[in-house]
Amino acid sequence: GQQLNQSPQSMFIQEGEDVSMNCTSSSIFNTWLWYKQDPGEGPVLLIALYKAGELTSNGRLTAQFGITRKDSFLNISASIPSDVGIYFCAGQLSGSEKLVFGKGMKLTVNP
Amino acid sequence: GAGVSQTPSNKVTEKGKYVELRCDPISGHTALYWYRQSLGQGPEFLIYFQGTGAADDSGLPNDRFFAVRPEGSVSTLKIQRTERGDSAVYLCASSQRLGRVYNEQFFGPGTRLTVL
Image 1 (cartoon, chains in turn blue, orange):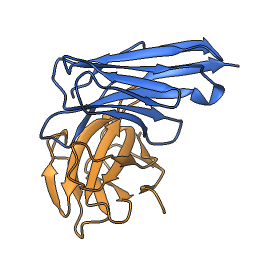
Image 2 (image 1 turned 180 degrees about the vertical axis):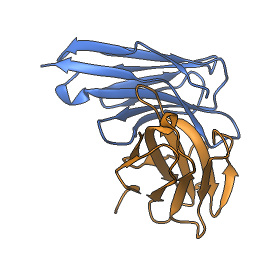
Image 3 (image 1 turned 45 degrees about the vertical axis):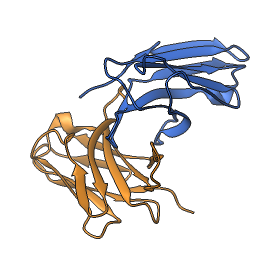
């Protein structure tokens, strides 16, 4: 099935560092979303973006909806140990309820 | 209030067997979704229900997969003649229809299916 191109696939950082990840698609999306998944759990929504160019923050997280509507990035500032997990981007096409996910980025934070 | 619940949490079966996976959505949520997540991958859409009817089943891989939601609440994903390639975590999500551009999908913890 279709998946978004998400990079990097994994990152190892020290506590306090910032981290960035991005997602690209060949399709134009109506909505971009960023989820976090902990082991044994389902994904949990972090940020939702609805307009091209939109920049949205949620605490230490900042995400942007690319101007072309084919990409998005997520920044995490001043990482802490509980940021560990797998981060997924997801897009929603206009007129569709289904989400298309990236392959995920596994984040490890060393205290 | 309770979130989305899925049972069983783990299911081990033999190749060729039939399995049923259950999803209890958040009370009052009219939309229900099934996704499949293979190891090291993101979730992939299978099917979406609005009420009792399947509004989009374009993600079902083949006719061995079938899902029902007879009363517009609980849903069951049914897999016939299971194959080793069906091994994955099956995630269920539900949402309210609020007329927004995006109605947040709340995910359950998933059922881990292993086909031996």
